[in-house]
Image (tube, rainbow, N blue to C red):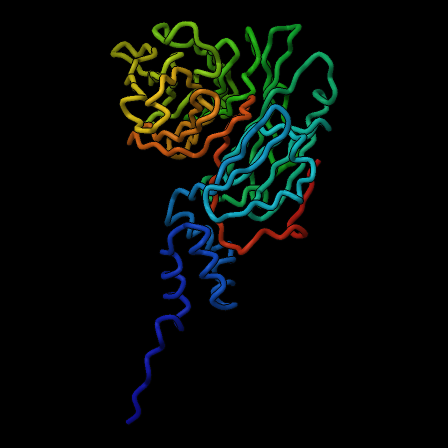
Length: 374
């Protein structure tokens, strides 16, 4: 009798996929696996596998962060991922406004939104609605993108754009929604507002709403399902004498709206919107963080007394902080773990936009996957 030999584990396609599924979600591990053979590379590049990989690991790794400057943007890597920016020749002149769901969102002087997936190099150009094209009585301030949590290949699937702006002569804020499925913009909706959205803060997704900081340090909240607006005043007990650089809307642990407020020294107050027994919603002070007690770094051995918030990672509840206009830190608000990410001497209106994504290819190809939607 002849014995039937059992297939080697790596010859079993299903078993091999299960093994690859458990690789660490770091660019180095996935890149190394893709170089083993054509078969492995094919599995890692398959969209179904990428979706399973995302679901298994839940949160993508931090590949780096975009730095928004007074004009244009640049990218700082925090892994062995190298961003190819030559396919976006006008990157230094575009206005970066959003970075989440694996894409970066830019506003163009040509009155269009650019949605860019740096991993696949897929681009999607969406022209502003007709009523906002070169209209001298309105200002388009910022935008956000929404997509299915299971589909990180944003511009290859369905997504929604939210455009936000301001009518200075009418003291009104407006929004307009774009659906990629239909390729159409909806009606322009407006509501009274004392001032416009603060451009150096991205929106925070809270439930069915998007929340932006206003120049008055109030919060502009837009319910994109009900298509209703609300303007939420800042906490009455927040630090006095601070400006927009010291306010950052947050998503709380229970999925509600929060707010971080820096003092002009090195304290941070963490506030949350809560309902009392009478269902009255108000701000509640959750915690006050004394940063020099929490962060051990030589910069705090000096008399550092200037701290501003430079960005927020909604997926991991991490705030980007800048001390004395040059020392950059990431602070995880739940664990209070910190990371020094660099020191620069040419600080000038820089904002940090963290970029997270699963990187399963050796490098994005500059000549594939380009698209345009008007």
